Length: 449
Image (cartoon, rainbow, N blue to C red; front, top):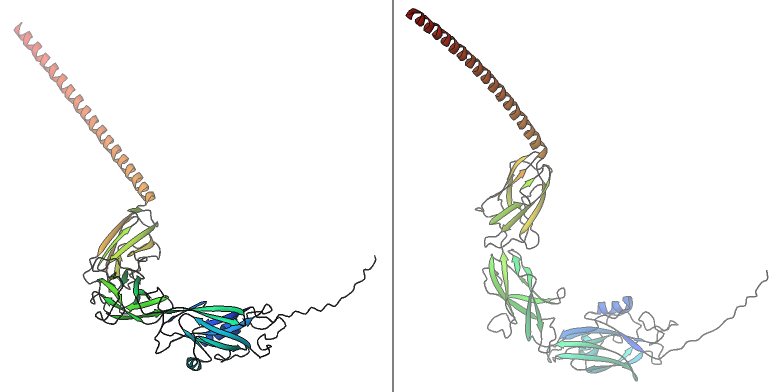
């Protein structure tokens, strides 16, 4: 076969793109997160930041922004060009000349928090180098402050005539509305506080407040004891959370207000009604899923428990019962002394296996240490029917009855024979008497002749 000549041609392609095309804005309420997003993760964080409006006299810190100028040749969200050159430091001035402007409420400053607070304004000239690893580099860090006004600020970044990008920060005003939410309207009596109430707090413009404190008030402190209880913002629930303490069984309503006293409160939520269930069993009912079973058959025992107010119990209770039964189940599965209801139904089911022998099973549930001392015991029964044994017993009974009938027939035959003998004897006696009478009559006639 022939060979094809192979030639190598060297081609040099030069790509130059030194024009800014955009900006990545790594934002957070702490410098560590924002810087880590820039250096490690290469991802933009917190596309929108919410902060309290604060006061004009004491500007409130809102967020840090780490800007990274990008070009078409940038990669991984960094300012490096495709050739590996830092776009900003390769500029004639050694940095990207970026103008930062605020539209709406708020101001911006440059550097660390203390430095930025002293140089804040509506517009700042920022020399972005994107070369340092400092968390609060004066050239790479923008700090956003509230100025006492509520609303949404738009922070715009431009380089020359190019609009690189923007970031919005929402400054919330004072609380204007409170909406209360519940996890469940039925809660268990507990010595420790439990987060059963949450509150969504908004300003007059409908912006959610993520700072400040609101207060939960109980209509009956004998049932829900804390009043008022401070509710602070929870990032877990994304709203204010209230940890309340239950003191006794019963019902009580919770109202959320904006001040620590009712007299100074200006806004309040609608009241939420709660039922507090007890943790001791006052009454119990029990039943099997059938009335009769075969030996060893699977059965389901259902137990329902209620507290002193007749509410179903929805929490586990240790040693709620004392269980006794006159026959053992055929396996190790048995009814526990503890009570663990399914969710809030107050009901627990147990799978057991009936005794291997026939008869009536009697199971009694009395109160344990987890029940009121005067809890009435309940008894439940189940019939265990052994069909094979019952059939054998029936056959035996039939055989015995047949034997008895045979003996009775034999006795009747003997009695009949005896009666026949007696009748024969009577007939013979009668015949003899007639013959004797005839002889006497004949003798009398003879004498007369």
